[in-house]
Amino acid sequence: MSEARDDDEDLEPAPFILMRAEETFDGQERVMSRAAYDLQVRATVHSASCGHPGYVPDDYLEHLDGLGIETTITAAELCTIGTWECVDGGYRVLDWESVEYALDGVRRRTGVPASPLLRPGPHGRVLR
Image (cartoon, rainbow, N blue to C red; front, side, top):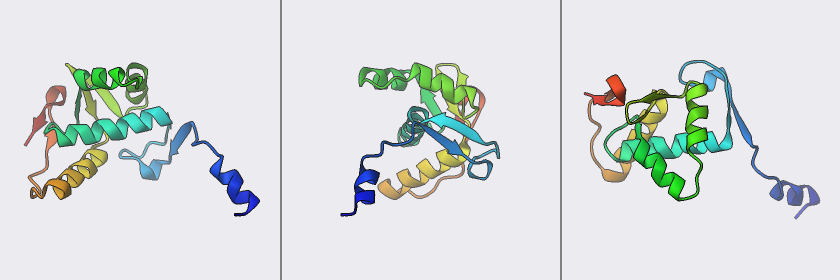
């Protein structure tokens, strides 16, 4: 193994993630912590898997807190950068493209055919 390759293995992941405008759901460039990105992915998949795509309930975040994952500050970061919004009893994921991607994954895993598009309604509740 080359010395340069050894150096690459020792690199830690970048603490922040830059999402260029062409990579985001609304064309806005964003910078977020790795923790915020990880929570966005994990919570979006959870919301799709549990039948409430795009809605992240507070009790799910409390569950993650119990696993040692800091969610209060991270959820506030996601709201501040415009990826989530606070709603009654939880959060609504505004990045609908990531919600659709998570739903596609659920459909592939479960074999359930695609249902009509689900869109978040008032307070993050899903409307058909």
